[in-house]
Amino acid sequence: MWPYHPDLLETPVPRYTSYPTAADFGSLNETALPQAIEQTRGDISLYIHIPFCEKICFYCGCNTGRANRTQRVEAYLDALHAEIATVATLLSADVRVRNVAFGGGSPNAIAPSRFLALVEHLHHHFNLADARWSIETDPRSMTSDWARAIGEAGITRASMGVQTFAKACQKAIGREQDEALIDRCVSWLRGAGVTSLNFDLMYGLPQQSYNDLADSLLRTMQLGADRIAVFGYAHVPQLVARQRAIDAETLPDRDDRFAMALQAYDTLTQAGYRSIGFDHFALSHDPMAKAARAGTLRRNFQGFTEDPSDVLIGFGSSAISGFPGLIAQNEKKNGRYQAMVMQGKLTASVGIARNHQDRIRAQLIEDLLCRDRAQLPLSLDAAAYAALTPFIERGLARIDGTQLSITSSGLPYARVIASLFDTYRAAASTRFSSAI
Image 1 (cartoon, one colour):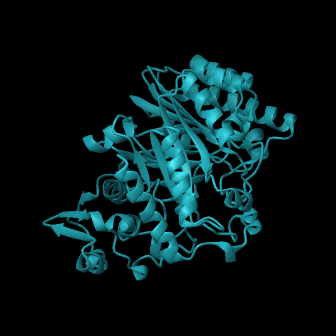
Image 2: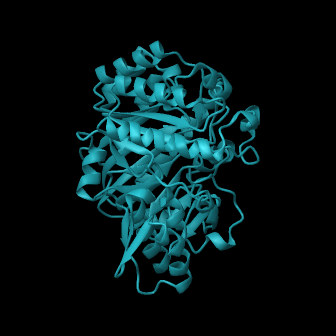
Image 3: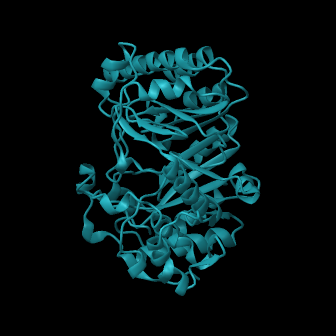
């Protein structure tokens, strides 16, 4: 049972898929990203962003648009090919790609043939040293041809955006899909060779009840998900215009949201799933659970990962690249992104150069979120210690010497505790989602 302290959850905080976060990005010199790529050695990972979906859901805050204009999609994919070729000319010959992830949007919103052409282009330009391939999918646009393409590409990890099985909730968020469709998608993905299958679910949805969440969790387990992510819906219509289609009056209140998060945690851990943080879960055989047991779990722009690489290069509009000393984000607007890469340029003009203190705090935050404990640097300011006091007094965290630990009761407060070490938050005005 998690203790509920709403006063400690009042301040919205980042999800910390990076530190510093995207809210803290500023202008970058146009040479920053090319130089970081040229200096890269060893093992790296790639992320390819496909900013299209066949249908746009009301809740979604991703950089995506309708894939209903063939010419627009084709122009984007041509630009993506050009960007890949440009980056390849900058990389050292000894660089090995260990992980390739396709996200969006919905990668399966494009034609399977164009996807396979993109895969072939990556093979042509990079040393894909026994790389592990993963993809995000939308069950509503999955086809047997797409399943064959996934098998041909050698993808073994896939994530399905399901969110909820409750019909009223589906209609309220603009994502109607029946269970037969999802079941068919699971069969196709398993038949294509996917051995690690993730379901994305959500709590805090409009009109969602505890029974709705319980039913979605049960159906997901029955369909054999190896991993399950249960995200809290973040209602920020002032930032995401499409969320204005959702009636805020139908959303569960903060007390219900906390209870739903706990409901998901209890249901899945009692069914044999290992908790990864407080809102991700994996069966014991899954690589994510193995990484958690081994203490090698990491966090990057895709969230929790077993990927050990310190370098992730992002392709496509709005994609983010991460290096030990730099975080850089590509141009967000598709038109400008395409124009620049077709001229042989890289498009990252915003990001942040990470100094020594940034990197120390980044490691501290990652350790807290991935391992529930971290070594506190000797240079830590007194204000951070003072801010920890209410969490320690309520049994949510403890300090032993220089080690800070988050207790089992403190799991839902992990992001809030991590934010206490974020020196950028005091000056930031950007609104984040609630921690629960």
